[in-house]
Length: 211
Image (cartoon, rainbow, N blue to C red; front, side, top):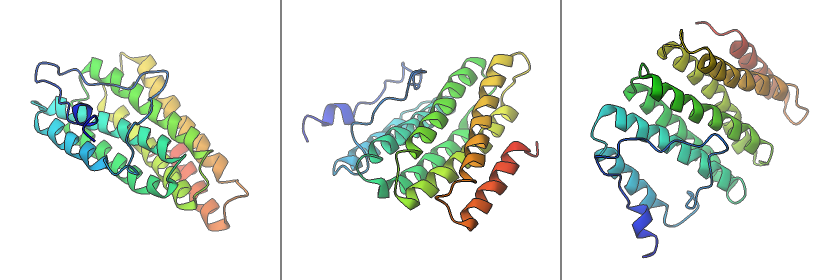
């Protein structure tokens, strides 16, 4: 436990306000997942990170980073404790809601980095889904992908995308991948008729959103 403490309790200084964003080539791996007995230390660290955020925009960046951490944890849990994926994704969506409530999306540089994170998270969720066998975990991932497609709409609404066609396309492509995923799963033979009907309705709403 002592060797873990330095990394767990590391807090960014007030002078280093640039958020740690996920890289384009992947979100990386989580060293500590909710399956670990030391996970509570990670929660304490995040509480302190928010406490010392300094500004609302920095706090928003922290929430976005926390959401990325939850997706990394889901990747790890897919190979160990799939029963913990559902509560982890619940926390993931909570962080996204907190982010939307705090972020200034009119900042052009911030918008670009946010888009990279969200599109990366969408890709990872779809990749993890194919490796998950736990039914509740599968349902949770499908629901999260659906919610993330709605989150993309909030980004489109919040960002000033008129002069950023490439960014607009990136977010639109992320949404489209979610819609295609839902449509594909709606025809899966592994689902019952009720699940297929629910997914088909979600896919239709995803493809024809009310803006």
